[in-house]
Image 1 (tube, helix red, strand yellow):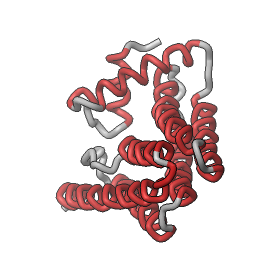
Image 2 (image 1 turned 90 degrees about the horizontal axis):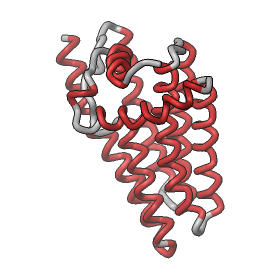
Image 3 (image 1 turned 180 degrees about the horizontal axis):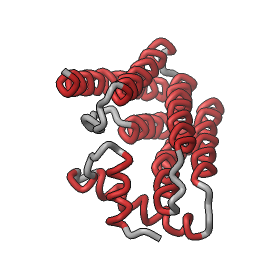
Image 4 (image 1 turned 180 degrees about the vertical axis):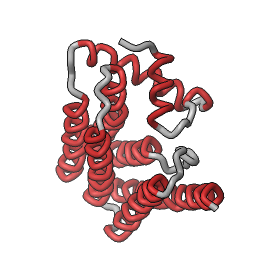
Amino acid sequence: MISREAYLGRWQELHGGYDPRSSRWVGPWLSFIYALARPLARVGVVPDSVTVFGGVVSAAVAVMCWSGGRWVLLAAFVVGAAGILDSLDGAVAVVSNRVTRWGAVLDSLTDRVSDGLYLLALWLVGAPAGLCVAAGALMALLEFVRARAAAVGLSEVGVITVGERPTRVAVVAMFLLGSGIYVGSSAWWAAAGAWASLAVGIVALFQLVAVVRHRLS
């Protein structure tokens, strides 16, 4: 079983050399995830199973929002749990020395599906469909730019934008929480969540494109 420092070092290697210790948020978050991953790795939990379970949990969010009412309040907390699972699968893989290329692909696929399910959840609660589609397109474009930059030689993470997945998950959870508490104005909260997701995506895309252009020029 590797130590916390060894885990952070391995995470750094897998993320293009970005040092999580340099961030006041990333380092503590990864330390928390490491504490959760250790017992799972010890009992032999397969990382891919955590990834798939996280996807199932994300799908449950949409079902809860479709049901409406106070189910939306529960959905907000389930989004938070899914966010933890999203980080946990990679941690289990590193701690148990089961990092695979297929695992990375499965994780990325599940993340994109989950992003779509969360926006679907906002739409089910009352957010405009076009707004949700636009926010989803920006999220996909953000990940596409990052992937293309890596494919042509950018070996570093580049920049931690305001639109990284933990932020996107937190935005959806926060506004679903508002929808669940203030049921009478749930559609307003859902629309605000979609607008916030769109705004985060726009800023993040400009951040990422600026850094990629600078480093590849």
